[in-house]
Length: 397
Ligand SMILES: Cc1cc2nc3c(=O)[nH]c(=O)nc-3n(C[C@H](O)[C@H](O)[C@H](O)COP(=O)(O)OP(=O)(O)OC[C@H]3O[C@@H](n4cnc5c(N)ncnc54)[C@H](O)[C@@H]3O)c2cc1C
Image 1: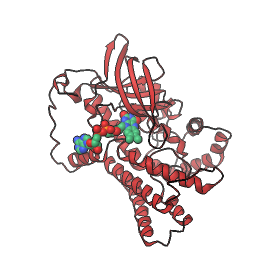
Image 2: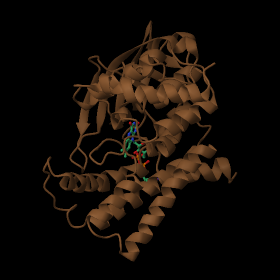
Image 3: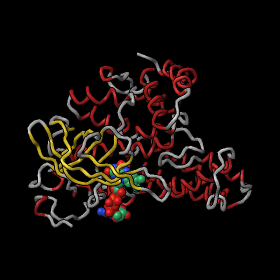
Image 4: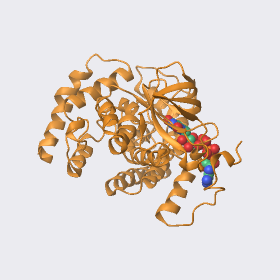
């Protein structure tokens, strides 16, 4: 088996010799993301802890630690487009899907050939996800799906979706849901972008009108989708709570919900002559401590909700401190591509607006605290009407 030191050398060689060639002349964020992933997979580095027969290397935790350490700050930010696929859907299929599903989706997922999105939230079901009303009905060799989803990040780029839909209306609300893989490119799937206050349209609303899914593209058991949803969400909270502190820290990168790195905010304080300001110095110290804490929480394998809460807090603080040091440039700026400073100001303004969403996506702060209270501290469950009542009989809007 490859030793951790040999792996380190492989990774260094990849970043020094292979990746620059793979990205040479490739433009556009999706094309660059795909070029990076395919180069990574072809170099044998895309699924280190995946079984060899699924395109992985079958390596262990020690090797994963080498990966995290060696790649910190070097993963192109464009890779965030694979956050849902590589980070969540693919491991869920690896762990809970049938052999046929794993065979079909893991390898192309790891290689970045297919982009995924997550169709969980609905206009009437966000925090109360188990209240979802999109329905899937079995029809011969297919499932037919009708309903509406919302806040679906990257759906406009996606080839596939992890979809939650209700398959049994007579069962209690958590017990009648199934998880599917939905092919996005079909007449019954209408994706409409939603423009955010940043001016960008990261997410979408999706209208499903008799969309079709092959009968065996169910992840886990039919009506067992709630436990699959929870398994996938744990990957999500772990990923956004911890890995978001990695990644390319270039100031111009606009993608992602990762907090601005301490180093970037400190540089802005220096650029604007605020490094001697005692209040700013105090804020920078808090920012630095927070960044270390998020990274240590990851190393300790703390509960994913803890990581997510810290990441959200760090993101807000970083945006607020950056805003304070760049004020007023970050409120009224004009972007000149040749002026590094104006791009930084633009980035700060973007992050300040974008960062608000951090506490919502992947489950709100309040929901993370409920989870920690109930699952970690053992507090009594939140009272909820009718956990055992058939969904059909529950009052709904
Ligand atoms: C940037 C971003 C990206 C997203 N991407 C996706 C995606 O790709 N796919 C997807 O399916 N969804 C996505 N979402 C949706 C996200 O999961 C939901 O916004 C989130 O779960 C909250 O649901 P909601 O918006 O319906 O708010 P609601 O559930 O209506 O909550 C409103 C408020 O009430 C509070 N609240 C609700 N219930 C409780 C409770 N029991 N105890 C205490 N407080 C409570 C909440 O904390 C919140 O403050 C995304 C959201 C954002 C912001």
